[in-house]
Image 1 (cartoon, rainbow, N blue to C red):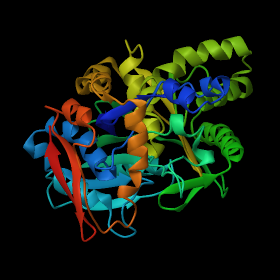
Image 2: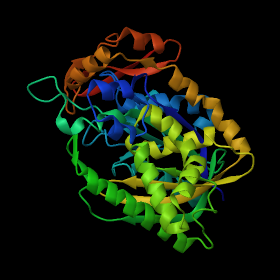
Image 3: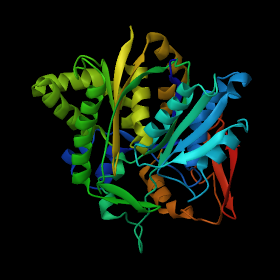
Image 4: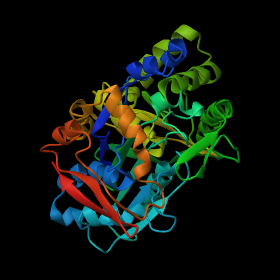
Length: 419
């Protein structure tokens, strides 16, 4: 039996900011900033959350299905670091607003940025089990970075300064089935590697903590060791020749470039010039969307996958090697095959066009949104949201039919369609 991704879509937010302007506004070291390789970042408004982002990513995928196909979705998994409740899963809200049938398993996975890979592999195993022939699974990675202004003032906390330009907001939805029109997984070709490390964490729901240097070292360690585990399971694997493209979890482009350079040096004994040329050919197509949205945690590697499929030269079947990493930590290297027909099918979602249509925030609008981010926090009991707080965003959503958070009433979140 074959299994993999039948369709996938990226929702990169409704508003974005030019991060070069942000870096200059924050008076950051521009040489250090350039190493991030970022261009834009998506920003979630107070009336947007993991539920609305997940629904907005999944709706185009479901709209392309016939009613009978929608009825075969028997598993909905949300994967996130931005959960809204310690018990209730976002998958229940998403399932409801997508209008899916009730013969469906609904649950949520949290494992830092590895969570969506865990969801994808779990969904693939469900399909491969054959216990419900013809069933489909919907896996949604959805996350927002909503850092709060420092207590006692409007300024951002110091540790946010260099993370700010690369921290994004968005979601990726993947339909997993035995008809892998977009990516056919190499079944059994998986190398996983995990251990306990305190590189980054979320000790409180609305903020992160961690050690940036330790996180980088753990990421580099896992990129190597998970690939070595993959090589134990798959014969005649060559890092340089087996994979026509490589996709990495992408906190920011510079981190990916460093990891790829290290892997090329260790696995292919490549000199710096060769590694640079290989990066531009095999890795850079996957950074295109990431450079415009920012780090969306577990969904980032799948945004990079969508970017690769949309932007790569796929004139014949190509094998893609995929590295997924989640702090704390767990990692996996696996692979799959895409075809020219897969690329044509995937491009129907017009992800680049949707990113182009987002509203560009001014610095004043951006600062205002950051200051108002505390309106909705983890555990908010009652609040009504102003969906007209930035009129340009509402105008940009016109004609798109987007879901937004209207209010929280006794902890229950109520949403509405606009546009």
